[in-house]
Amino acid sequence: MAHPVQTEAEVLSSTAEGAYHRLVLRAPEAAPRVRPGHFATLAVGGRHSSMLLRRAFSIHRADVEAGTVELVIAEQGHGTGELRRARPGDRLDLIAPLGTPFPLPDGPVSALLVAAGYGIAPLLALGEEIKRRGGQIGFILGAPTVAQLYGVEQARALTQDVLVVTEDGSAGLPGPVTEPLAQAIRAIDATVVHACGPMPVLRAVTGIALDLGARCHTSVEEAMACGVGICMTCVLPVVGEDGVSRFVRSCTDGPVFDGARVRWNDIGTVPADLEGAAAMGVKG
Amino acid sequence: MQTDDVDLRVPFGALTLPNPLTTASGCAGYGRELAKFVPLDALGSVTTKTIMASPRSGLATPRMAETPSGMLNAIGLQGSGIASFVKHELPWLAERGARVLVSIAGERLEEFAEVAEQLNGQPGVIGLELNISCPNIADRGQVFACNPATSYDVVRAVRKVAEAGLPVYAKLSPDVTSITEIAAACVQAGADGLSMINTSLGMAIDLDTMRPAVAGGTGGLSGPAIRPTAIRCVHQVHAAMLAGRIPQVPILGMGGIRTGRDALEFALAGASGLAVGTALFNDPAAPLRILDELRTELAARGFAKFTDAVGFAHRPVTAERLS
Image (cartoon, rainbow over all chains, first blue to last red; front, side):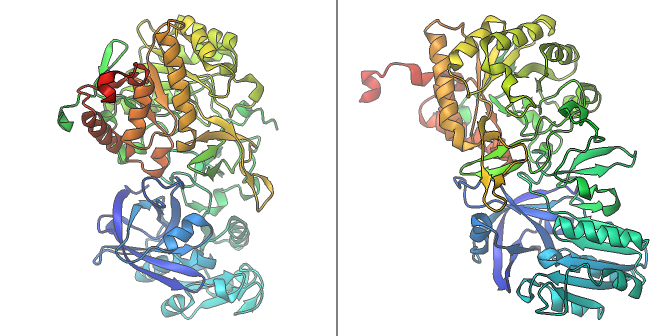
């Protein structure tokens, strides 16, 4: 995990972008530490807010020269609603960067970047980095409807290989984001897939990528109370390098995991062969 | 009174701690992650996540839900067991000068004793906190702290094997008919102090799934939402001590401390130690801020020493104070 910085970050801009909101925050100490895939948390309200838990967001971009960190916010409840209403000049309690970033290739690779909704947020900077290392990239951007797509133009500015998919067919191809995946992996000869989105999407993407012999790095979404590794609420079952499965924290061991190591079908359960399951009375 | 002059030192067993603040068990892991935000040796002590004899996976997810001014958690005491703690975590904590209060638990009283024994002579350990009140153990009917007899037995078993002079605290549940009765049983069994309170058993229903919001069904409620309950418990037990119904032992107060004012409230109720828990999730740097604020609050009321404020709310109102 990166060494995080906690700071009172000034809101430089707060802009509605379709169904989402982009916040640009001044955080000069945090910005140089950010790598694609890191996330940030924001406290909601002041010291006496009744909403105690911080809200976590993938970091969209960090600009070292400007000393800024950008987040894309989807309003999902009172907490994110309050953050969406932040105005330039407001100060937000930010902790960043957090978590483990996407692994970067040593040299040129062909990578497919798959995002559901605002899951694109950390993938654009990743795509730029892969290109900088001589690689080539393609995007699949999916959402339930056209209104929930994000970052299509930014992706097109990076590559012509951008596929848009909506479940209701309101933009691009109709169907789930995984529909054109196998064909896209073959089309650009991708050896690695990077994905960000809800758990069911990540599970499906991992399965398809592995079937085609590509590696798959997934940025997971799991509810977390602290984001810094002290509360143990955001665990998921992951197979370690020693072959032993454990509940590991998505905030510090992730949010980016090798998809092949995540036991997607066992999320939300205590598998009997998990380390320490016997002590919980779980029997195989 | 100058704020900087306020003396926050507190006695703890044979030691004197630089201040009364510790972390509430289960809210700071084993200290490694928190150390990125707070130098651990600046805290009076660090209370670890509860440690049991064997590795334990904990419960399924989802494990938490936000509630008004609080949260529910159902972690289920995930941990890698006492051997791993002694080998990997304790030396790291000791190297950083942390004074460690180790929270331990067992499914049987023999397990409490077994874990306690392995902590004898270990570097950095300044005391044990017996988690006899976790609401997330598998058999909810067996929370030791709901019964004076089982509370007595656990404390007795640990006190027998723990190093002489190593303070043993019993952590009590608010979910009992008479917390003074449980407190009395623990002190009678040899508890050197009492931690109050553990989380209170609660529940929330997710309106999207229309099922309980945490996979374990029920969870432990923590945060400022439970502070009035915690203050009541501390005040009740301290009053029983002042009345001679329970021998006097120190109380480590916790339950929704978020500011220096909250910390002072616990001290006035009778707590000579203070633990910060859920507030760490909101603000991992909270302990140092709370200590600064506590100093200011004490100075504003003319207290030169933190210990002078302990139990102040129990003193009769004098004509002088009313004027």
